[in-house]
Length: 284
Image (spheres, one colour):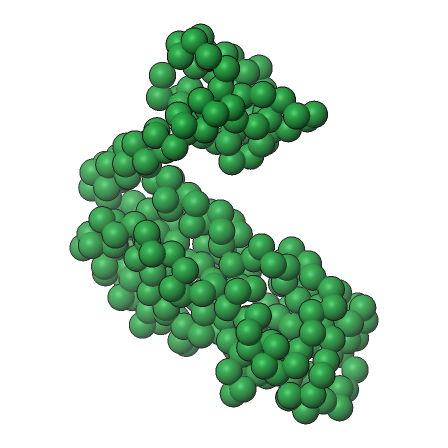
């Protein structure tokens, strides 16, 4: 029964049988059978189709609202009691972090915690937060506004400078505060809310949005416009410090947060890991 309920909860998030099957690593027919089993058990329809997408019925919505906290608690109990006891940390990390300075940071921390086994998952920050809530991940390293998630414990470990990569690396006669159109991250990103107001203050206009900072940087390097990205992304792609326009002195930074469920954050292993991550985050 539990796996059937988990399938319904996942379907409520993805909206399609195919995406649900991908997330759960099962076949689409298995997804359909699990939902049909639930509908037979509760003797009422829980989903209805709208073209290729699936939406919950009134009864399906009520069921998901009731069981989601229970499933999250059960997952959390498993992680806290079993995984931590074995000395293992399952972590979700923002893709842009894990593709830039994150590995260097984690390698440094791992040398201080040789008894711990680390499992990393690269996701967009909103996905990391969802999976922390659901109990799939134990801790997360995310970007974005640091007071947005009251149901999770969130601590800022660094403010990563934002920089402008001039289009095609050509010298740009620009003074901070002048109007400038840039390519940068799209609105669903965890980082967008934390930089939007400062961009307006500095008169930076988002002319084009993309789903990843690495895509933004590559488009800027190819000459499609000026790119606004975290300094770590530019550095990873080999862009020299002398070629970018730094904005941290003008208050445009991307907050990087260490996040966990409150019960998880209080565990000694997680506390030790957090202290090491925070201490080393400024030097990567």
